[in-house]
Image 1 (spheres, rainbow, N blue to C red):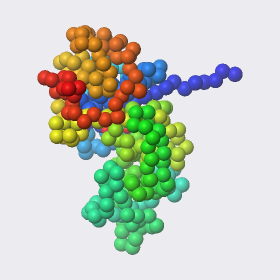
Image 2: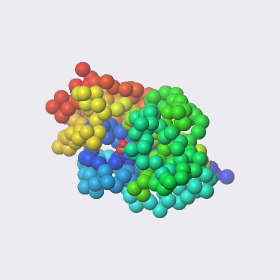
Image 3: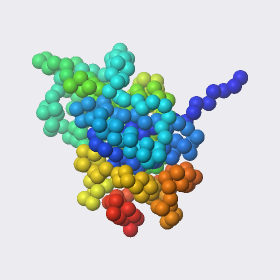
Image 4: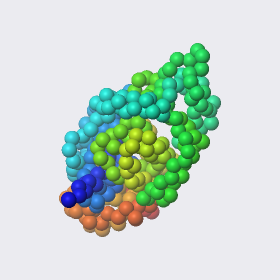
Length: 310
Ligand code: GLU
């Protein structure tokens, strides 16, 4: 009998809250090269589940920049904003399991709770045993317990005590929108993603995502969390802090800077090459084992593309 071997599958999952900036280019490049090195597919998913923060024009501009840079994705782009029915179905499964509960607490009531690993308050458990008298259900929370261990392919062994370090997290928000934590787990499973390569700012979310995967009987992908790009003040580059968009006029310069950031050593003459030359060099030379855990120097600017190596 012939065994069916699943095709490896990676993805890049930007939130369209701004144009593609250097930090997201790094995530796109790392996830793309790793998927290709595994002989796999590479998907693009637009994570616009948090609708008030997302704009279609940013999704269009991110996709146009990826295409202009020579990234080739497989299949149709998935949009989280079109997947509400599926998220609802999965939430109903969790409700039947008693794995989630309604919560009536307001943001103001939680403001004094001590922060967890990701800076958000650890839920004190007010509604865990049932809605207290006088409270109305606003959101649905995941009942977390125990510890999760996993080995990150870049950051090494990880351990998180969910109740203490994160707490019961929201899966359906008070404004009726599903939370990233639920959407990402459902989408990765539905799309057959078997390895997740993304920025290390998301590493604190991974344990609760593994917890959810186990509850739902979904496979857990392998994880590789890439170093996070910081600006001159040491803050993470993000679309919310209005990080400069990548320089679309000269893709090779930006791609080379992203490759260096990921521990690659492009030859000096590559910056005068075409993007086709860049891609064949990058695919031949990609090595996840050479990606540094973190980078403390500010990312290169368009006028000084090699600055972080100084
Ligand atoms: N949408 C997230 C972001 O843009 C990435 C989520 C993920 O890769 O799991 O930061």
